[in-house]
Image 1: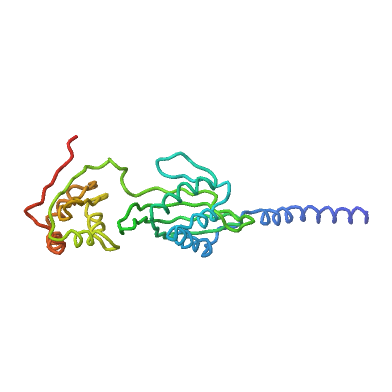
Image 2: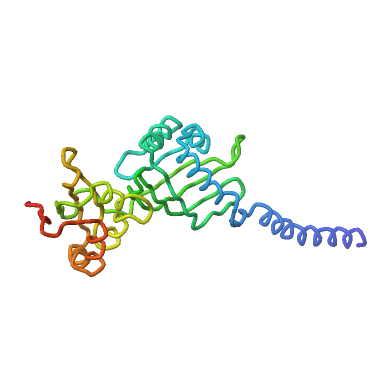
Length: 251
């Protein structure tokens, strides 16, 4: 009987030990909880600095060799050649980018980053603005982007009404200067119903200028054009009111 008691005690111990080990294993195998990653967030500044410097190799180095690029209005592309083609084209055009990281998290060897971007032309005009979602993985080379998906906030070209504005100015160079830089007339129009505004000048008479406006909100744009703010801007830019002509698209 004593042997039976010892065996029974051991059996009960084994029965108690099995679920305890299972609990320990479940904790050991549970996925790591995602944590905020300032390190991953800082890569946005490196990406923007590389673009501003035209350093395509530095941009490529941020991407894994088997990465996927999911650009808007284009098929999915893969690998470093795709990175070089897509972002190298931006660098060749002299574009600069401003990236803002909204969220960057890491769980083990996988990271995710979500943010917004603004692409700016050499003359200071905003070429595009939108949002991005990146997946990162830790490789032998460190953290690298394994997939990069981004899309524009601007309407698809051609989706809005087009307006052509022509007029004369007192000084062509002064007028062009108002359309350059961070706080240019591009920003004013974009905030008041214009999806995009392109600027033109007659090379034979620089005082003859024009705008091609893709309209996102016609009511807002017309209210802006007729506002006191626009009247003040026209006076500052040397616009000759009586020369103004508006042309709307005929569909």
